[in-house]
Structure formats: C-alpha cells, structure tokens
Length: 236
Image 1: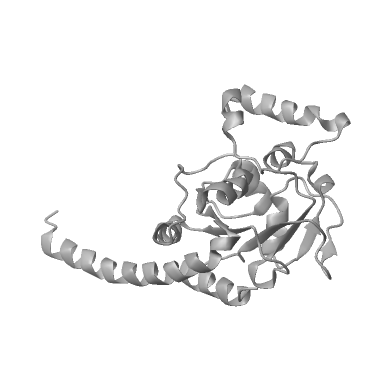
Image 2: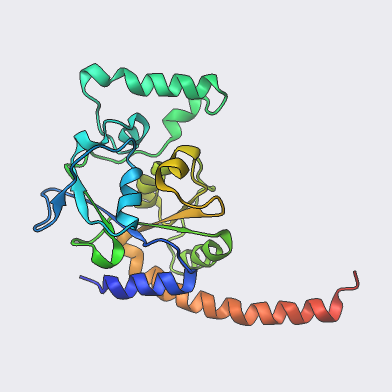
C-alpha cells in the first residue's frame, strides 16, 4: 500500500486542511479488524463527518436507507416499504424550486451496488481507497485543481452542486471533481460555509500529491511575480 499517513500530511500542509481527508472504499468483504458501524445516521455524507473526526468503520447498504438521494447516487435500492422516499424528497425539492426533475437522470451514480463501504481518515485507511474527499477553501482547491490538470486527471466537468455525494461516482468515472456542496451535506458534516469539496480517485492520489507540490511552489513564485507587476503597473 502507498504511504497514506505521508500523503495525508502532504495534503494537510499544502492545502491547510481543517479536517482529515476521508478515504472511501468499496469492498467485497469487510476489512479485517475494522468495526461495523452501529447506530443510525440521517445521510450517507454523515459517515464522512465521522471519518473526518478520526473513526474507521464500514457500513452495509442498509445503513444508507435513511438517505434516499445518497442511496440513489450509490446505486443502493431502498426496501419496498421505503421505495417511495426517493420520490417524496425529489417532489419536495422540485416543489421548492431547488431541483428540476429533468436534472435527476444527469446525476452521476455508481456503476454497481456496493457490498460494503469503508470510511476512514486517509492516514488510517485499512484498504486502498476508491475516492478521497477533501474539504478546503477555494484558494487552496485552486492548487488542487491545477495539480489534477498537471497530473492529467482533471475532470472535464463543471463545478458540481447538489447532491454533494454525486462527487464520489463522478470522481471514479471522470477524475478529480470539485463540488460546491449542498445544504444537506453542510448540515450533516459541519464543514464551514467557506469550504468546498474535492473528490480524488484513489488510484491517482500519489500523482496528484506529487503534482500538488510542484504547483504550490510555482504559485508562490508566480504570486511574487504578479505582485511585482501590480506594484509597477497599477495606477488606480
């Protein structure tokens, strides 16, 4: 396995992360010595919050039933007696003008239903992650976007919005994806109003970290260059 503690340290330092990067892994079997999540959470992204706080655990599809939209993006079918809940929440959202029903088919979805989903801080991930989620301020995510382009894995898609959880299948299919987040995610994860998300494919993590080091150094030099030009040429 790659040196995930070192990778987390590099991302934390360069991007000034206030939360641990979250490793999300889809596995066929539960990882050895990893606890099963016990309890109830209102959304799939609530598990991001727990992992960012330092917990490592795995969930089963049934743990995601409370979140019809998150279950949809993760290709988890709700049980028959709860199948109406996705339609109900979509009806509420469209009624509020928050969403148009014709947008739903364009929401990225996992290709197959996961058997188990492992959540952990990146430094402590027990298995190679499929996606790593970062929350940072826009000025820092600018560096990450530039690094993704340098590494050749920038997603050729616009800034993602709601639902935030679609960033996971989007990153797995298209490359590093940036999401503005959504109100539900912000309530359930407690990220700051000034923060946005980036979702990085796990297989590209080392390439992005290496490119990020180069891009960060280049930006320091370019900042000095542009400040000098502003000082010399600005008249207003």
